[in-house]
Image 1 (cartoon, rainbow, N blue to C red):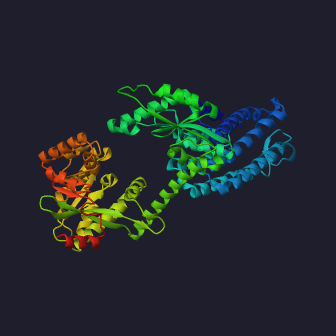
Image 2: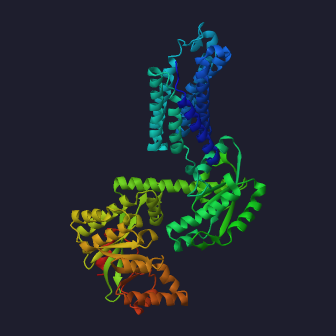
Length: 627
């Protein structure tokens, strides 16, 4: 038979290229990429032995029988072992704890079965052998080798279903192609045995698997080679498994928030990438960027002080990108613990603000873990409240300082959980925003306010102010949903005033602008909340149809203590008056503060001097007494 050997040559070249790329680009070693490396090597050796066996089988009289057996049987073993190794690889990616032991036993037993049956074939004739005419012949066990790979494919499908969250659509496609590729190779080998296409098909598919599964950018931060939190998590798991002690220096960019206030998102990313690149160039695979402002350098305890001073020399000088110069300030924390004692080291590294050693790690870790547990409990409480529509809305009256009448009120969310008790609204809102729950929370609160208005807005109250989260403003459906809720409750849009908190995320967003304009056209008024506490105040006044400006309570409180702050406060009031904006000042707590507001002709005021936030019934009673 005349074999078409060129496919094997191409397979060898593709596999060698892939190995070269793999060794050059993969700086981080994991169990899965070690197995993947074995898959490539196995495919490469299968192609080499297949290529050599073409000549030894075609001209058996020219080669020793032992060489014929060595090449043919080695190829059979390597080709079939590919399915075992790939199964082990998928298992390492799936990370199904209870399945791991079974997978390991099955892989070991199958590999032993392949080795024993194949390499004993010269004596037993079980799988393949040369007959008396030196013809290459298949034995009775050979057909089982066609079935075993499909058993592994079935188990891989089980892993995908069981651990589907660990795989993306491209990875599932890659594994589907492996199955189809091997099926194609088997079919071709049956119909056209002279066309040796199997190894080339597998090499091409493995290249796609490499791109989808082993892309080194998965373990790198941004556009640098500095390892990221995924890489560190893999390292921690491996270190924990080996029961080693974990020693590291954690450092944080202290002025990250300040940098964020004067750099746009693109330049901020460039700045952090510059820091990451410098750290990687110095410390290589020991350096990890686990958050935008936080880095971990794995080093021995005796080296921590040296590394700390070295990093200061490297980073506490002006740094340059192509278009701007910046400077970072750093703070450092030391970690030196056994990982088996810390349930969630990644959470500790992201939250720790102090050194952790054998002497104090119990106290520090307990504090961090308790914080994590509390956040989870709050999130569960929020989810349960969403299901049960259990949020309460309190109302804090707002007084017109010129007439002495209460003309509006601010709606404020409240949640009391049976286990946690009263949950701080600010803490709850931040967690709801980070976990994608804020739109559901906001919609329920807005619906409760609209129902309250529908049931009979107290006399003299012209509108209710409702706080909007920046994440709500960024939702394209917000305006339509709010208009629908107002319509369902027969609420006039003029009875609603929506408070926007000034943030960098919302100021430049077309979605935010569209939401505000659509609602404003229907009659909803808008106000800026916490004016003076952010950095985009002037832009808000220019870009958005703002009718009311709410001055943050900290501005008022500081003005009562400091002459410079008083000057800023007075000039802020004058600026807003010149812009024809209505002014609400928050946080009035005594008569002296109220006197200052009246003296500077502020329009409205709210604070504990008049009333704390009240539940609906008490709010109605308060207004009746103070009509």
